[in-house]
Length: 128
Image (cartoon, rainbow, N blue to C red; front, top):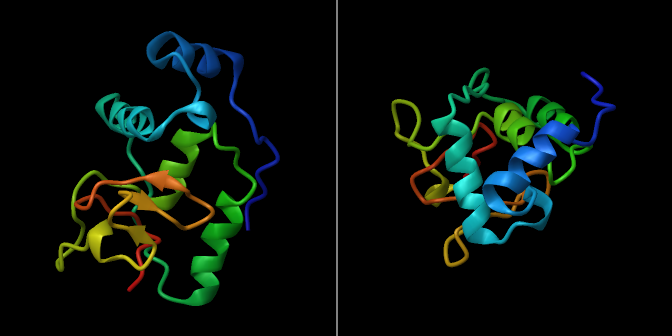
């Protein structure tokens, strides 16, 4: 398990969020967070979609990596969780079918992520 002792963003990252959105992810509302997520991918973010956690132990290791991250560490959360803005895999899995997805709020309710999500998005923490 990798230990992430850095639980904040740099001053440059903070300022970039403030310049572009007027807030950091920790203070952003639903719509601004959606824009921030889409902006990360528009700026070339590639996430760790593999390996998909096949066991509870593998799933737990990913949660252990995410747990110490602050709400402002959006890019890191997206990377570790393998977030994508499209369905994934042969079965075209997507947030809408995930047990953590709150359909009416358009939100991922997994405490370690706690982010807005569109129904067609996906991450490797996907569960039925």
